[in-house]
Length: 448
Image (cartoon, rainbow, N blue to C red; front, side):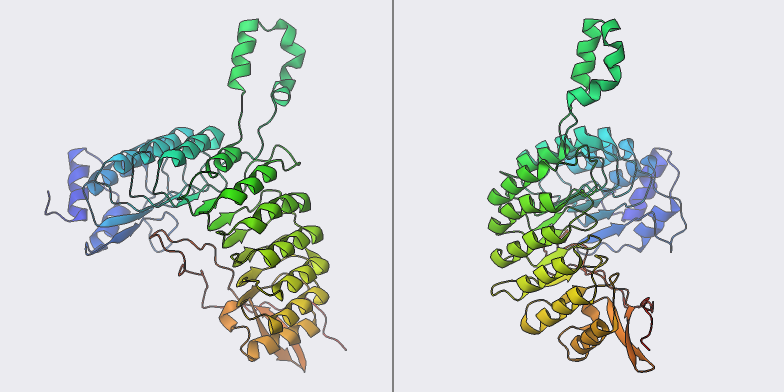
């Protein structure tokens, strides 16, 4: 079987184990030429393919035919029906000493606690995988702890994405967990009560990663967006800030939808000011307002490495935008890309940002759609684009004129979603920019 192609190996494995051939997998393998390093694209949401989505049974046959294969270094299995059983088959493949996989994407499947724990166990003895993406799988807090402990042993994994995985930022107290049982507590035998007490012990999955990252020197990208919030006090931000003070490896950090407020931003800022490795900070879809933007502006004045910030869908308003504009003009500010989309900013704040671009020479990407775009601001951005200070492909607006009045239309371009690449590089990742544009006019009245 050594001279067989991947598609022939797949058919042989399916025949040997009496597994129905998945036409989607077979077609992909047939089109794959085994020259150099290759990545298999088996996404379940690919509209150009009409085959059935990949199941656990398919994962068994696929993992078998990938054993001892030095060519396949990437496996993209997003949006399929892979559950714990399929994750177990992948864990067996990863644990094999001859596994060549460098990236594994399992986003938005049905992997839960057991499957994630199997993957964590396999990575303890793996030295090839650089990227693991599990976002959208409800693995829960306990599995997150297993992945965190894996990072204490694994010395190669550089990217870990756990967005929307039901991690918690703060463990609920035993008092809160037992509160529903209080009316019955006198009638519960002591032995049963102790069993319940032990089973309800909870720790924070986010806190587990914070603890590990104090000493981990390998991980470069971490995404823990959209965890479960048990507290509005943001206690985790204190520990996170302390971790940022000592961590020297993280390059990219995603903290979207974590309920971050101005208070949490103030705590994070203390660590960010001293951190010298972070280049990409994702704070989208939080509750950062004017004061939070002030703390972030102080970070930009003191941190010479931070290059990309995503503040989309917050509420910094005009005052917050003015604070950021001032920081952008500060000597030594190295910010290159900024998104302030949907932040309730009017002309005052955005004009200060446009004015800052005339002084600043490093900021090259700016995204502003979703704010209040009045005509003076439209004219300012038309000037920035026409003068070449802001390249048309580096912003999400385009100017046009009707009856002597200038408007801005939305262009289907946005801040890059990630910096890190699964091949171990981070500088030239795709910006996920689309060449097409949508002409959606701004909603303001034409001046009379």
